[in-house]
Amino acid sequence: IWESWGAVAPDGTVGAMSLNHYAFGAVDDWMFRRLAGIDPAGPGFARVRVAPLVDGPLTWAEGTRMTPWGEVHVRWDRADGQVRYAVNLPAGVTGELVGPEGTVALAAGRTEVVQRLA
Image (cartoon, rainbow, N blue to C red; front, side):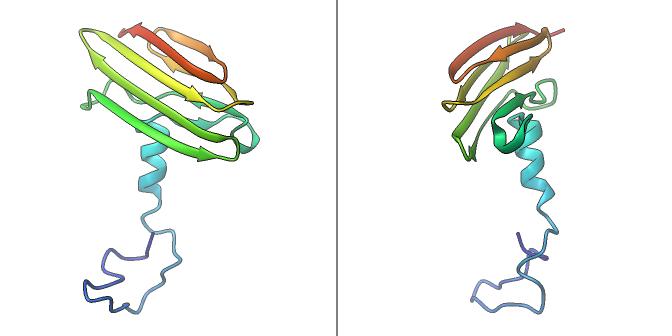
């Protein structure tokens, strides 16, 4: 992510700024960790913590994070006082889902969980 949104003009002209600078990188980190809730809980994502923000203005989110083990995929939606989660972990990865009713252990493969909002 470039130092400035205008680092490269529509005609391809490169501005006088770094193209290898972290400036706006925190945005995508926030989307993975807070919207989708995907957070490493062990080295190299061998263990994953899934704890999305489910009580904000969004009613659903979905995200996929490529890890050394494969794709970690999370989808959640909120309706009728409940949150429905679908989590896919690649082989060799374990984790936990942290929701409004508590923590649920996750194993490799697909896990679906429904919890009531507090």
